[in-house]
Length: 428
Image (cartoon, rainbow, N blue to C red):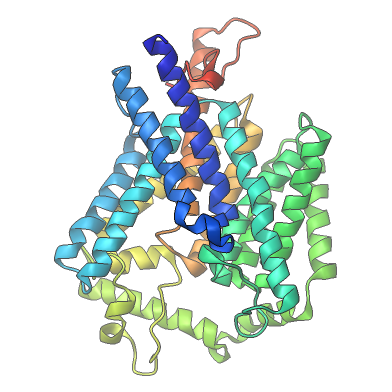
């Protein structure tokens, strides 16, 4: 086999491994199939994808694409977390958090280096949508049998989905992707039906979580998608059907919990957020530049909390979490990264060939960031995968635009070079 063919094959297998990681992220088989737990599939697939990508790059003498300002900002953010061991309230937790952030940074960079065509982007998004069915069914099943419900009525599942709020926000991001597949004319009917089922199950699971932030994030995501979709009438009809279904089938407890927003001072969960935000504010005032150290928010709680806040909470807001743990320096890095990826998805929405998916990704980013205002978690793989997909969409769209400017012959794909599916081409 000639070196060029070896590089192509490694690139294809890196893409397959990355797609498998995206699916495993939702299906989490190691959490509910004991025999698969030792395999650590998420770690294995991500390492294989990153390793093959690097080997291919080194073999062909290609530099690693670091994604400009947003990529460097993420590298700076994770590096700052590692360095925070020297000043953190809890050095051991800071070390763990920093290492995990470096892993997530590697996943992000693998995404933007491997997903180099519109077809690859669509396949990974489709894998996430299809795998989310496993998560949704797991949540719904636990709710129906009454297993481990939070507060006696809030549904959840296993692993990273054990927190109802995190479960809801992770499902929020797949709903606009699924609906975009349903609304797209070019989608096969079998695939449309599968995506419709995935979207409906995800919405049901979000409702059963009774997550107020998840409900608001879902509303924002679907509203934005319907507003920006070019086939607006069809988009509004699809969105309206979801709203009607929500109104008709949501349990009374869902509406009762959402009504407590108006009287938040009487709700323990809402007041926990208020206390957490006060703590983040005091941390920032005390240590404005570098914070209390990565992952150390709860460990510094007693020093900054008001007397009545006897229970230590997480920050419940990703931006306040960052500013409390890594200060204004960390927040600047994170804003450049998150803002750059979000802006990239919106910019890619005008793409001729993949704008429909970019619009769904931009809606997913908006909904997810709204959820982050209520339940932020800087170690969520879903966050970095979503931003990685958004950044990849932007890169592909820019390559497409550059080719159109240079004059690509009629009938040639402008999203990626011919043979990009086999790994012979990369976006500029």
